[in-house]
Amino acid sequence: MLSRSKIVKLAALAAILIVILSVTIALACLNPPTGNTSDSSTASDLSPFTSETLIDSSTSERTLMPSTTSSSPETTTTTTTEPPTTTTTTTTTTTTKTTKTTKTTKKTTTTTTEPPDADEIYGMVREYFVKSFSAHGDMIEMDVFASGTNILQNLLAKRLDLLMRRRQEFNLVPSNTSINLKLLEKRFLADTAYLSYLVTETCSFSNSDDTSAEKSTCRHNLLMMLTKEEGEWKIKSFLSRDKHFGMFEKSSSARVLKVRNAIKTGVNLSPSLFTLSCSNDLIAKRYQQELDNIAKDKKASVLEESVPVSAGENRGLFDREAMRQYQQQWALSRNTKHYPDYSYSGGDCQNYVSQVIAAGGTPMDTVGSRQWYYFKDGRRSPSWAAVGYFISYILNNTGKGPHGVLVKNAGSLLSGDVVHIDTDYDGKYNHAVSLYLPGSSPTFSGHSNDDLNYPLYYIPGIKRYYHLVDYGK
Image 1 (tube, rainbow, N blue to C red):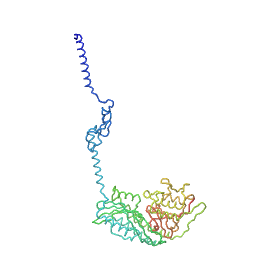
Image 2: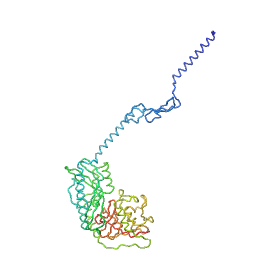
Image 3: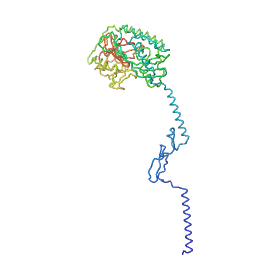
Image 4: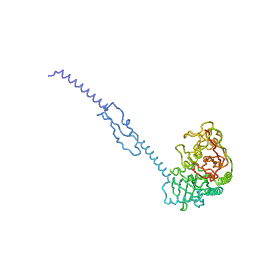
């Protein structure tokens, strides 16, 4: 049996154990275990995709668990830690954007879908162009214009008169005409139609020195706006790259491209794009200037003059047949393998003329203060593609490269020679063409407006003639 003293000791020890156990339990309640204390990162720290990255303590591997938080379409990027006010803001922003999109859609009311009477529109345009507008047709005035088109009709009447005068003065009567109207872009809005065409015209002229030669060809853009008045489609306005139209109303390649893009996309398309900048006073002024110019062209066409010939050693003569063949191949297309096309970035006319000159055998000129060369886009002289710089170069260059002189009569020119034209009648020459077939009725080729074998005296503008004498080797 246990002694009394041993029992007392055991009781005391049990009491101590009870106290220790009680303290341990109390501490455990105040500091519960956290599972895995080796990674204290929270789910929101690890998951930017509205999912929770949890740690499975039994395997110590991370598994991706989908969030149980529900989301509306407007709040798919809102995390579960964001307050409700953020969700409200996001919803409001999305609604605002939706409203803006709806407004933009309302503004885009044009369509490329043809109206039921589209054939009537296309037929009327073609009939007008062939019978009245074409410089190679009968040029019969037609009553197809909408109200408020007095300036346009005045312009067209003066244009027709000047064309008829050139026909008579230079015996230029077109025949066997073929006209192709290629529809490029179209767009319709209620009772308004916007149309963009590429026009190609070919014909023969009665005064051709060689009846077996190829026909004359010209190509240009035509942009038309038509409206429906009293149930009939009428011409409200149009722009044309035709030279005889351009002497009154400037239709630069940049302007044409802007309107074409508007018709194609429907963006910023409005009647204001077709507003004519010319006035009746300007039309009257240009009419008189061109009358004087016709007389000047007539006088120059009958002049007789001698032209200088190549002098000195180390000079080369141009291969005129090669220059003509180059024109025949590239006047109506682009030699983009070797040269850039500047048709819609300032104009391709002088660039094309320089190509013809180079085809004649002359080397590039990279020597001296005046130079003429092209190696690649961005590495060319200003004289290669700019009319004004070319004039300064060709008349003053006596070293390597081409050299030319001014002559008074286009009949003194040879294939590949150069003609500069002042289309604005302001003394500044802004267009260049290359002589194609020489003779008393010379023809030319050119770019921007594409022409081949076209009569030089059938186009308007003040002209200057440059005979290429030779080139320095």
